[in-house]
Length: 151
Image 1 (cartoon, helix red, strand yellow):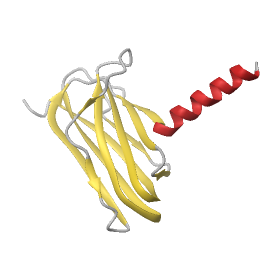
Image 2 (cartoon, one colour; image 1 turned 90 degrees about the vertical axis):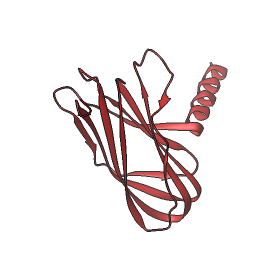
Image 3 (cartoon, helix red, strand yellow; image 1 turned 60 degrees about the horizontal axis):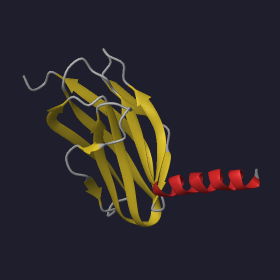
């Protein structure tokens, strides 16, 4: 029994080192917007991400708005990347555009990530990866899908 407990503890520790999910948000049509206002501290040790379930009746484009605040030390970069996938039945996430990088040269910043290429993803992952030493607080996170904007 001790070996089994140790094995599960080791597996959990390994998963926590690479990425950690903050929470899952749900957008249920006809709503097209979700906001997370609880502060989250990002370090350079673990990349963190939000998952947003947003099954829409048609193709859409997305906006991510996030407020970052430098807390301590020096994050030399915080990358914010958007991924999508058709279903949670598959584990394959596809990058949507390129990551936006904040170099930590200001005390705080607001990043607006606008994807203007229509897609049909049902789930989205927004990944935050910090490098350098220090901590950054995610003050506010907003996710918006825009329907029928490109017709």
